[in-house]
Amino acid sequence: MLAAREDAELLVVHAFPRLSALEAAFGLDDRLPNRLRAAAEANIDALAEAAQTAAAGRVRAEIAEGSAHRAVADASETFHPDLVVIGAHGRGALRGSFLAARPRAFSSAACPVLVARQPAEADYRRALAAVDLGPRSAAVMRAALVVASRAQVTMVHAYQAPFEAKLRHKGVPEEVILRYAEAESRTARSNIDALLADPALARRDIERRIVHGDPNPALPTAIGELHADLIVVGKHSGSRIGEAVMGSVSRFLAYYAPCDVLVV
Image 1 (cartoon, rainbow, N blue to C red):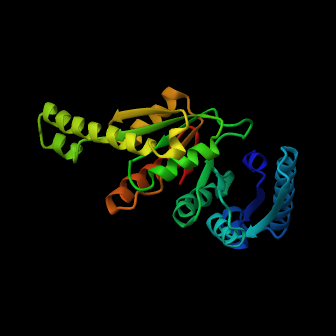
Image 2 (cartoon, rainbow, N blue to C red):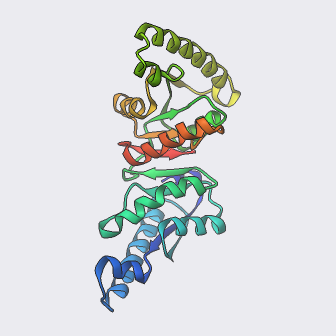
Image 3 (cartoon, one colour):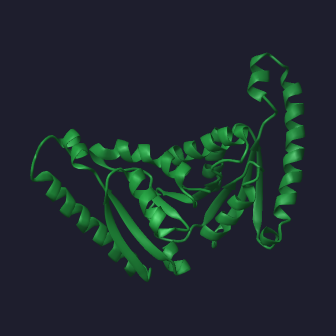
């Protein structure tokens, strides 16, 4: 659907397991690889045909032997995509290898990666752009406005007092922690004002949502409350601390968010 809307070329790639992986999963059977290969070819041809039916004009499909991560990386090197789309999970006995490939796809991709959980039956209606207000926040917002161009976009930022969990663990009074958190809230609101003053964003109707709490529980809660069908999040924020925080958040959402996840 995105390829059709943007008049983009679409490459459909299927990672076909090596013989050793098939033997480990199913045992020795000389006929099995050929049967599975034929099934894979039929499935990928059906996907390409469905994409053309959905008005994607330039579609081609290919089967790559090896891991899902390697297949995505190799295809990206030759195809130079603007966006990589992967399914939220694999099927059957080889599901584990597919899940293991997902974080590698995030770290190695030179472009945004969309983890698709739902069938693409319509344009996104409600999108969340999760920002940490670091260097990649503007890129997260721009990606949300492109991929979810027909959706209501809400910027969401989860904040905490510095070292809030440690302060609470050491018995620091809650009113003191909340005072620190309120200072973070004021800073966040000021930074959000500056971010949305960007001419590319100022012309758009973007809602704001600032919540106190850890991003991992706060963002799924926001998804549920706003009935979002897409959340956009940064891969990392540039700093070591930011990369550890937002990197873990993007991985958490990719595995557990109830909607599609776009990692920028």
